[in-house]
Length: 494
Image (cartoon, rainbow, N blue to C red; front, side, top):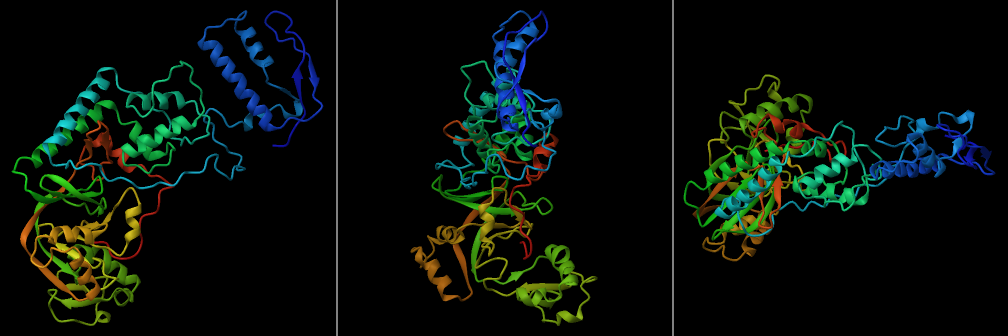
């Protein structure tokens, strides 16, 4: 919008119920920024006056006082200047806005739990009990408000939903109670930091913006959060029904992390990639019995039928690029010529795929063997960058482990000849296939825990990625953040 000549008031209010102000043209033009700033200052004066119940000869006089405090008048040629003001959450339809008001701070992924208390422990039950008391008290007070609309709120924005957002954040402690009763509509730095704390506590991408996933999480009611805490307490109690082993591995799929527990304390944690919504990582208990270095990957029938065969119809050279051989009937059967097969009608029960060891292998350089009815396991991956994302549901059901060789060293530490952690590095350096059968098998649990609490009282929630917590959480699970990193494309996904 071009600058326009405006006028300012210069005189006394005259008449009853009328402004009566005399307008004198300014010597310099006033731009859109001046008008917008003046309007915001005057609106703040109006709000303070209303909140303080200041009456200056009725509502008309009150408005006149605000106008005299700094709103410049405009010429007739610019009588619609207000259409361009970006306030009160009004979207900009001009198409002129090309830069962000506030750049997004980089999201540093630090989502592993602190401390040594395992998920599967009596201490965790105690922490959850305290959280349940806390959320019951919030429910008894009426819960928290629902934030209307679905438009994003960003730092620097003016939005009339900001007072509601702040009340929501105060309810769960991300924002401290205000000493003043005055609420403005500006998304300031204090509110931004509170939003970032909320996002951290809910496992969301930490942007400081109220994007769609954040808004959906904010709008899950206090009653539903209380039920979620109670449900997850039941899940942990179920894990405690049998005696706790001295050493075991636990994967929590919604939290995208793994705990290696030794002598009832967490010895180390790892970020993991788990199954996507259509290929869920199951809940199970199994036993780690072997470590396979430089493994062949025997492509499961489901992955072959649903993922690989359709791809081969479009990319016949895919097998050669990925060093995958085709064999008949079983994975030890005779190799056959891939060009002789019609991949559009191939049957995975008869046509098997076996990928050669190496850096291109979908399992990476090591596989943690844990036989189970679901055919899933833990393994390395060549796609290391996926661990830099907050949401990591990308696989076909198996669990990919960050820093997997540290976990492998921990698993093998009591095996003869493997006491030295450097032994794993030596095997990798040798580059030769090796299978280590464990003399001390280790239990492993794949769990589904979407809510828990920490020793410091902080309550944590995670997205219900497989819709196992009930319908109230479906909206939060389906919300899409357009600024989040894209899901991986290409390659195989065990």
